[in-house]
Length: 129
Figure 1 (cartoon, rainbow, N blue to C red):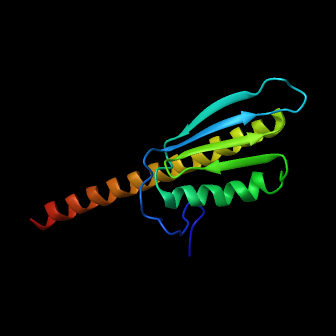
Figure 2 (cartoon, rainbow, N blue to C red):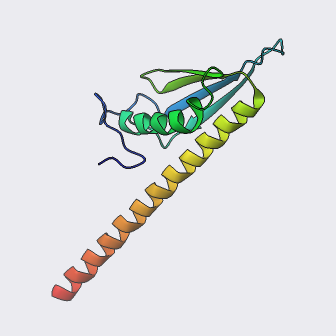
């Protein structure tokens, strides 16, 4: 069973050429100019993590705002998201930041657990010597 941060796909275990990079374009019909913002999500560096991210993104942001958001995902880790208003842009930024933060917390917990296991093994080997 997949967790919130895992997904299966044809290239699940392959690494992206670069960490996920999002170019977020706000293209408001009322405005003559578009705004552009770039977001680097360095915690997402594999196809598996990218698929999981977009499953969550679709559910939370894209599907509820269908018709107001478009995105294109490249195999090199570059994503272009186009939204038609500032409020939706803010929702996208918030989602990406929260998702990235959760992934970082998960990585930190795994690193602490691995460090604790290593320390435990060292203590056991010293006591057995």
